[in-house]
Length: 639
Image (cartoon, rainbow, N blue to C red; front, side, top):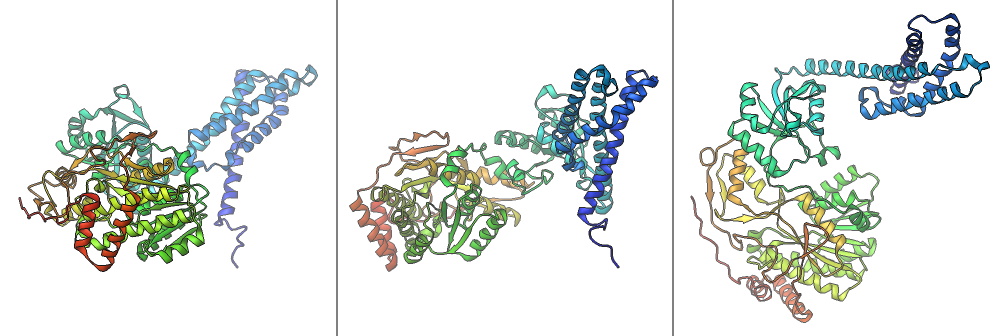
């Protein structure tokens, strides 16, 4: 017969109980030894007979007090192999707290109870020795466990000889990386030193690892120490700093890696030891967005929130960030079932207590959308559904009108009709002086949303305008990455082509921030930073892949495509961008069209779109937005 689960040592509960019993026994030995040692110190290892009797009398209640203090402080809930400085404080406080009643009894008990009065020097020495002993016991057990784990991993993984590395950054993140590498024997890394530009740290030691120099010393250090690669171990390193370090490493040359972003680590997506190569996003991204979290949380928390286009690059990230802010219900509206399935499954796994509704629907299908509004009555609608690919919309202008204009009008009209608190339209920098069907259609959508605020003043209709986002579907970065992987060539439309870039999480955070700030009728413009030349982007991505532009990978200039601009803008020349309380969000003051003219334009565009009259769509967009009615494609140029 098998042993019952309750008494089986392999049962987790039983193992935990046995571990606690062993820990109690070891702690008892340490506390008893500490008290006896304190008496020995007090009497210089020659305890008089009377004092020995006092020691025997006092020992049980002193140790009992210490045990009670340790238990009440929760130290027996700690997992001993993870004991660190924070847990050490709890041990010290518990032992010192136990010493307080002992000292008080020494002061208040009369001479008749002399046997119960612990000498002051003994009480103090006992507290110190007991705290040190209790901590030393756990540190010894942790050290033994980590050593055993390293040996097991090394044997199990059959790793080659550890590669020598330097850690750039001797701050908290660097210490975490060094500790993790030391703990993990399977990483195959040998940290030879820290590199830090803070010269006050020079020649100091952290975890036994020396700070060997600054980033200026990297060429010499890599050569002298035969370094395999360096690791940027700075949490939230400024992008300029990353670019500078990468440039130094490319010139040496030596391979450079980076730790994951702090956000990924805190979210539990990756471990800090999951080192990766430096990507172009590390060099293009800007500094961390500082959100007014209380403002955004108040905007979304406890409300039914709808995200349209929830399976897209922006829509899915908006859904993640909304879910983290505790809405009462999250409505994911998407017409492509596969991407909807993916984001629905991800949100449910990450936020198991959140009610999520995966709704297959076209935002332009008025009966379906009306049924959704009647059922769920969303308080906040974030409209991310749109056609965004410029060349494709030049070939399919009628579809751009249906999705970007009419679907926006349908969803926004229903939001106002059903009394939603806010409607946020995600627009684009291509709506400014548009040269493409996509940009012009989004400009008309902006005008529609502004006009609906006049019709439904109880709903705050706002527009948020920004440029390209890195890594979104159809964006240039994944296209370049695929072309480099295939051996080239990398195709760039024009050597003078420039674009603004923003990460998807940053854009999504600022969209929600702008939505929380809006009073209604505003066009919010996001600060996109400095524009980037696309050819420079291509060159940098090739170099980050360990290749040489022009030698290993050719760059081919294909000519500007129909509808494209060389330079994107975030505002019109006559727009005055007004500052808001957020440093990266501005308000454009472009005046809307008259309601009658706008209604006539939208009706004409809708009729032409459903009739398949591409030329009429172009002409009407041109009359409303100033877009060229018959754009000529650029000739292909190969350099």
